[in-house]
Image 1 (cartoon, rainbow, N blue to C red):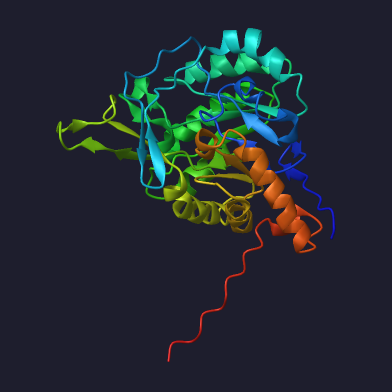
Image 2: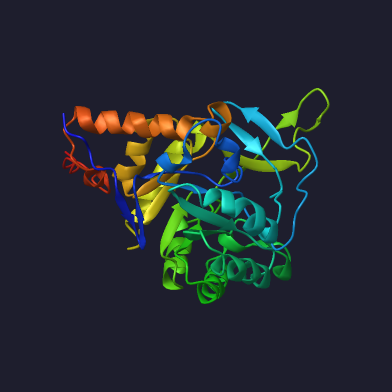
Length: 312
């Protein structure tokens, strides 16, 4: 059996393996130190960071659904200054790529956070969460409109020298349009997908379960949708992709790689199994070795579409 090469080139980033953790599901990384060595990961993406601390939404903020979960945390976080001062020094001790997820309610807020991260030591890349309401535009979601997305990516690109990842919203008519808009304004990498908007109702009380009424659906329920969108975007842009959505096993990872992703992020599985990311990485290594596949890079975009038989 071969010992497979797991390294991947994600745009300007060289990762030791294609497995990262997803923002909002892995805290600031340090919370998972008791469960495994963070250095084993290809990278980790921290909770979304805003200019100032946020309390988030009122409870209830999480509800389990068939094959997934709805969350409406409300982007609770300690703020970029506290992250740089207190969390980042701890993360620098680990040999893995630290990706800082960034959000704002205005372009100015995105820029403020990015400039502070750009000046900090130990940040490997930044990921824009564009599934946020633009308060300057009456609450329109940045990532749902290609023109609004292009503007915020342009501003972000000018504010940082770090590799720029744009996390795409699936709640659009055609995700290829927003993907192209992000690429055209300087995104180095695209990650997809963020959560789908959903709702759960307490039928006895006749009220929404979540305090925010709606929330983001994640978990295995969305994986086929996320794989399809990854395949679509892979055929629409030239920059590399990170696949996200309901990954709980190595086979799930391989689906995203075959569809065109270079790397993946593990999200909801972290709530069920704190060591899920490393377990999946180990399973991926065994799968490759058992098939004498020398490099995980052989799988990227290697999906074969059979020619359709002529209609008789």
